Image (tube, rainbow, N blue to C red):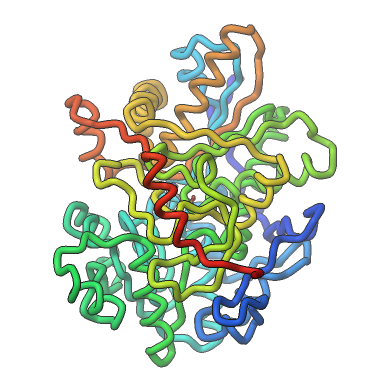
Length: 454
Ligand SMILES: *Cc1c(COP(=O)(O)O)cnc(C)c1O
């Protein structure tokens, strides 16, 4: 029988997350306190995060148990299916075998609840009653709203103003799950009030919204901050994706030659590739290619510098060593494709620096073209973010057509695009514009990087 999808049973939801820190050939660069220039301590992070997550952030244990309460909620949508994209292979007329791991089946429609649920759980367990966070287009805000609701916690979401105005549906989703969502910059924080005083029409940015959410957390009793990507513990929680996919590929009798995903802050793709990167680090899969895709409008990995930088615009977060476009970077408003964060997960940056990963950036028209090609073959309508990875799969599949090689290509398919139809409309109507970030703008933004280590 020709299978279309490989489904695992609920019993096969992983019982532990995989921590790559145990297997890195050299340790991650330390996170630095901006005031002292010294590595931060758990106490420095305690106002922001519960101790369990701070421990996970620096843990060197290879396997970390997934709490039974979290696994029980995962059962709502996990294990997620792994599809063999036979119709797409045919449409591309390629000998390549293409698989995709589909995270769009979760209630919010992406991979993000894998960590939102875990974060709400640990906060609740340590006595918190409320979480504050930022969101861009609303995928993370809606995922945390979903997670908080399951644990009876309040949730306050600072949503980047331009998205709040242009994309109301995710806000409505957050409110349906009981969260409060305000446009950022907002009058609810000092950071927000300062920005509004200077520029009442500010369209906001992710970095600015992070500053607001951080301030909210440290000034409200019973409240912590929650981040949906970038940090080690977030990537850790997402490894359920890759652990399941590995098992599913075993069932199919395949091992990938190429794995491809999109990187915004890096969490979904790292969650997918980390269990495979382990094989590469250990030498059992030396030829495995791991390709990260990003946007030419926000090319952190392909054009940023590997430096210490702040995670937010107001310079309040600890300093992370990452490929960055500078903490003041705001992507061009014509860019519709998500993946807008100025920095990148330190784990991804470290592995990129070690030569374990490749990276490529695409323009949005070619990305949407590939997404439409995919939707017409497989049916599912991709979010703009994984559409970048879909473009890379098309390129690799066409190379296989040239060479006649039947490579196994696996796509990390992070979520659906049901709330991004306006972007599809622009593309289909021929109104979408490509955007290449000018080199001067990158150089300008990078001048503001903080100095670390003298
Ligand atoms: C948020 C999001 C991303 C980008 O975030 P990462 O942390 O890089 O995974 C990608 N795809 C979807 C569907 C998202 O919602």
